[in-house]
Image (cartoon, rainbow, N blue to C red; front, side, top):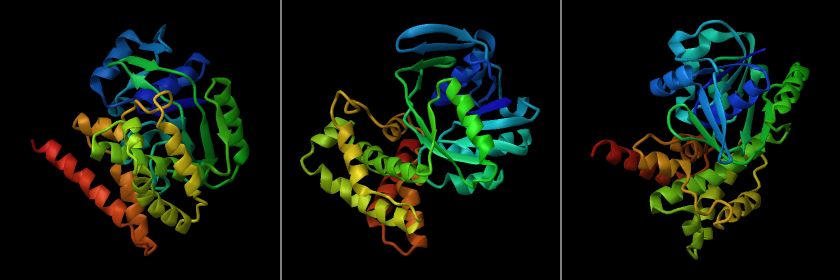
Length: 310
């Protein structure tokens, strides 16, 4: 089985390393030239829980350099990079290539359906974390899990076999009929913490320390819940609110500045269109007002605009 990681960033590198170490046929594709050259020449340096595990020579290419056909493609990009990445690697698909997508945010299935059949789309959510310590350096901590579902359950046995094989490498995947609910629950959390921390300029603990944080949280989640349910997803707002509250203590995630905050700080475009922006878009389709998500989306885009025009 030939496995391609379309994106060799933090999570792509971590999962790719785990499968490669378990003797799977793994290849990376990435557009970051320095990262590609470093891995190609010196191997991927893997540091997990502060322990240097060595360098691993996983084959890596830029999209225009690679050829052949792959059985499984694990997309590991930012949400806004999904379509450009799929365009750049679509020549590597065959008739039954499966795509695994556990990106943050909403709306990815519609994009994936432009490239493969629904029965070949595996969509889900993860709580694994990872990071890069520079080009060619994986720095990660702890463990995690993945929740996954085949969008159209035809020939499900192949997917279940794939899950079992990936779990042999420690990916800790659970096939779940509730994966779409989990995607919406995680998106709801990100629609609150990513955006408010960015707009207020604070970490998660500081947001939680504001005495009226629940009013801000519910202003977003009321819209997320209404739109999600209109989409046919059993969104449970109380679960999302509890998940957010559990992030506040410093011993959990309180000291963390969310990824959207970090992207904004570093002058990168954010995933807002796949979070609050997607809630706004779907709200219009279902005739559900989403004034809070509308304004938050515009405010984040205005900050991106200012950053890019300083």
